[in-house]
Length: 231
Image (cartoon, rainbow, N blue to C red; front, side, top):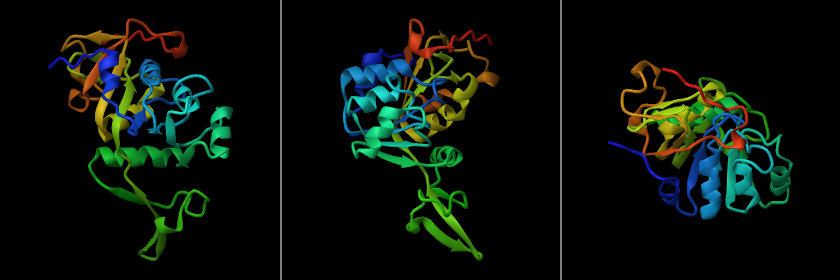
């Protein structure tokens, strides 16, 4: 099954108020073109889940600064002064998780389970009292799985079936998000026919992917991400 779609078709599936995971670790792995199309189409009241808010004026920061995002679930905002100001002013709800905990919450959802126990951050401000339980004489934080309706993913390489290869630190969150979302939309500038990716190189199998958007080339926003993938 050929899963190729236009960028307009793919992003139009996202309704206002959707919960959307966005891959990437800083710039690497961030699907800038999908984000820009979401900005253009203007869906609002979104909840975004991403490791970071990118920097001011790029990536998901554009969506947040444009008022399309009601809530951000993330690990840090340290590179983005405007988003920090929006959080402090009450214009944006922000939910913080330690980086490894956020990754595990997403992985847990992708594995089809509902949560896990941890002692990380148990006495910190980000942990609510109702999250604490005792088991075998120890206190633990109950961390619930984190799902989403959509995931926006950048792949270094994809085929028409939706098999994906990631590059560098895009591996940190993108494979997990592709498993934890109901609908996975992928962008790539390196697109091939079935069989063009050796099975041993596939990071995300096609079963998890709903749509593949082929980019003619990477824009300046991608910076150092100039893919020369050979498999």
